[in-house]
Image 1 (cartoon, one colour):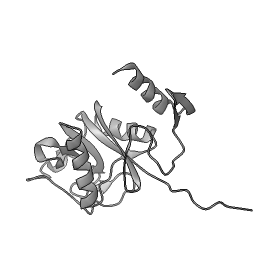
Image 2 (cartoon, rainbow, N blue to C red):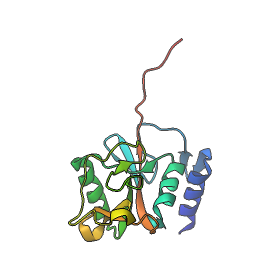
Image 3 (tube, rainbow, N blue to C red):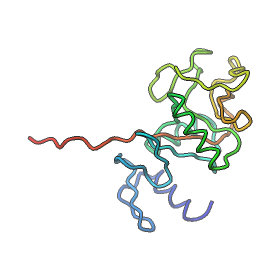
Length: 173
């Protein structure tokens, strides 16, 4: 990892607020109507496609949380198309974790950021196929970045997501 990228990760992971690095301010806790450096905006969310670091699902979940996001939830076909298009545009390869799991009850997939059931799915052919052994989902290039159930202890790339908060009205009084 080049030195500049290393410093960026240190700033993000350390929670330093208002830090300037090469003229860019990093504020890890304040959400706004624009995405931070390195994140990609789609509708009212920002996405971070982490391909240089490979983590197991729990570490990826933690990593996204440290960045004040979460492993991505993909809620509809339009969002799925955006994510797949971004992965292809980046010439991504391998598998990318997202934030659903059926670890509590096999076959009952839940988004971990909300505990809501997964209503929209984009399973690859023959998926899910892991029964109780495969409780996490990744988007795999061998399946055109459609969903594949995998063992959660495998190290893969991952996608973080953060919802934008639009500025609200000023409160007076």
